[in-house]
Image 1 (tube, rainbow, N blue to C red):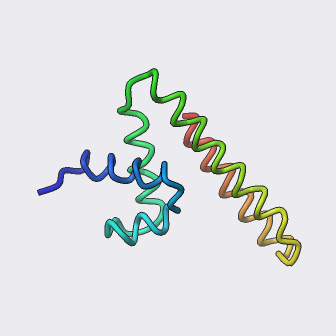
Image 2 (cartoon, helix red, strand yellow; image 1 turned 90 degrees about the vertical axis):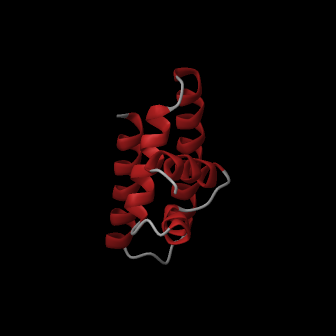
Length: 97
């Protein structure tokens, strides 16, 4: 039987391959994307200090690419853009915590 730690490590591995939190949550039956994100953050926190910095840098890079994509979609209504950028800001803050 898989333990939560095993699941967290699997989430970390999937995220490092570029999978979205929504995809990871569906694949691993974790519930919602935020549950996959929480597992990812736990895995980062448990990683050795020398690895944590690299993991955070990689994730910041993924979040920046996502922000660039969102901003490039000019068809987004201002409210949707603000909401999505707010989510990214929250994800970055959690990662730095």
